Length: 392
Image 1 (spheres, rainbow, N blue to C red):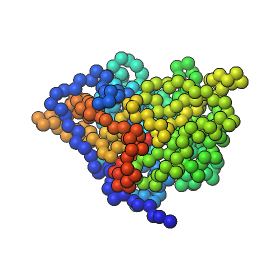
Image 2: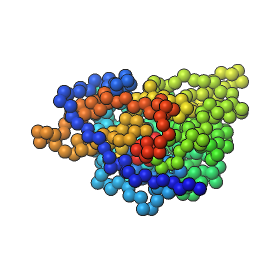
Image 3: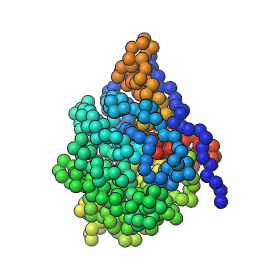
Image 4: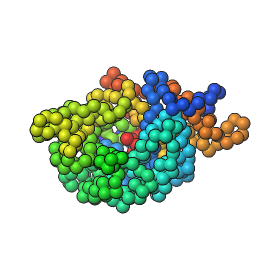
């Protein structure tokens, strides 16, 4: 039995310098990268800590009791996060997702939600404010988050069988508590659209071959007709600590085949450009999509890359800007926030906007598209940042 290799290079300690270009980059809400992809979504990690030890994300062999998390002084405070978010929104961001780690471990998170909910887009369109959580603390926090202005929530749940779920989270956490959290989110009104329809409450299931494949159909049966959208995610090669190999990936087309053995499905159009999930609707007896039965989604970043429409940026908990989930380094925005410019004056929002615009203009990341042509090299995997650090 081979031993897990623990990387010696901590990606959190490495950063690219974020510089203010000589020429100001104005905020017109139309910022595009070198491949013509707009900046639309911002995912903000509010903590690098999590109370689960899922082996595909934060395995105990690495994230043990001696693991050194970032000190609190290194983290962006809520005011700094909000200031950066305003600049990103001015550049075109319309959706902000709070992630972790487990974001509900960040004390008083609803205060940050309230600050972000007050941000106005240039055209007056409401900001889509959402959060991804493992659901362990959601039952006690759902109402406060909704009252603060959170629109939607996505809960990670990798199976309904309690033994399988406890084994996957590796801290013996019961599935019933997560289901209680989902119910509390629904009761609080998280995910309701303007017409009172439940459209924005989602459950994500990472599918790992030989681990939880037999939970695909039970999960579909449980959430079908509930108004909750279930999405199946291919096990990804994020970071360097999860021991990823292609043999553990169940391609999304096989997930659909398994579902179609029991449920007739019809393909649905993407809800928006850059949408990561392929949508499938449950069909009625006439073979047409039945909204009352709902839909499922599959996220196929391993077998069907969606890099060409990727419009997402990621901000780490201590202020590094990452341009791809599979990035090796981020740009240090915290230093710009906390230091004076070359003239000795505090960094202005115009400076921040120009720095972010300069970084995004140069973006050419498309790792998933190139994956098949890249050499299988353990060293290249070590350089990638961990998903638990910048969020999924």
